[in-house]
Length: 329
Image (tube, rainbow, N blue to C red; front, side, top):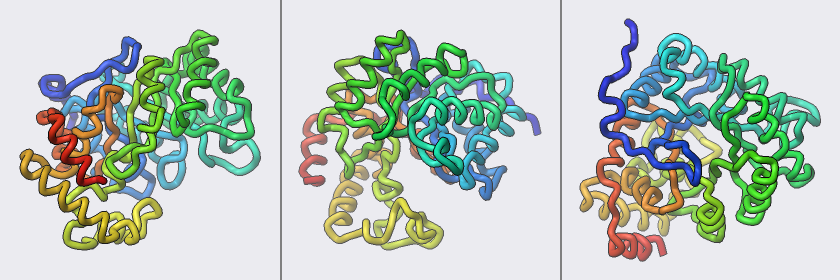
C-alpha cells in the first residue's frame, strides 16, 4: 500500500532554532541507534519512521556504526527513503557521524581526515544520498590534531557532502576550541550532541554555557537513561526489556535501591503533571534554554507516539524544577 504523508504533520510539532543558524529542528528527533539494525523487523522500522514523519519529526539521526552490524541502520534507512519518502527529501534533516570503530586497521576509527572523509563517502552510499544535512565528529581524538578533524568537517561542507558540521561527546574546553577552528575556516559549528539526562548531567559543568555563548545548538542523546527514566522498571525487570536482553548500555546494577527510590518519586510527580515519567524527563531537558531538540529512540509506534506527545506539555515551573532537583539530590 502506497504511503501518503499526513497533511497535518506540521500542525502539532514544536520547532526550535538551532543555535544562531537558520535551521529549525523539531523539539523531538528520532535516533536510529537501537532497533534499526540488520537483524530487526523491517516492517516495524518502516512503520516507526513513517509515523514519526506524520507526527512532525523531520530529523532522523544516524552514525556510521549504528546497527548491528555496523552500517545496517543507514542501509535500512535507504530502503525506506527510496520506497516511501523520496519525494520528501527536502523536508528531512538526516545526520550521520564518524568516530567510533567502523572497519579494521589504523584508518577505521577516531578523527583523522582519512577516516572521516572515507566514512562519509561510505555513509552516503549506504543511504543512497548525495548529501547529509549534518555530519558529526562522533568523539574527540586524543591523538589527532583537532585542526585536522575540524578541517575534515569543513571539507565535507565545502564539497557539498554535508550542509552543516557538528560535534558529539566533546567537553566544554574541546568544544570551545573546535568552534574557534570551524569559525576560522568559515564553517560554523551548528550543533553538539552530548549524552544528557536527569542522572547524567556532565553537560551542566560548563558545556551548556559554552554552547549558549557561542551560538551552537544542542541535541542530547539518551535522555531517558536507556529506559531507566521510564515506568518500565518500577516493578522489576520485565521480559524482553533492555536489561533482560543483557544490554551493554543498561544493566541490573543500575536498578540499585537509591536510584529506584528516585525513579518512583519522579514517576509520582509525572503522574501529577498528567504525564508519563518518560514525557516529564524529556520536558525537563527541553526546559533548558540551550536545548534545540532531544533525541529519542523507539521500539514501537506506540512508544514513539507517547514520547512525541511530550510537546503538548513542555511547561515546567520553577517550583517543579526545584522539587525535581530535590528528588535527584
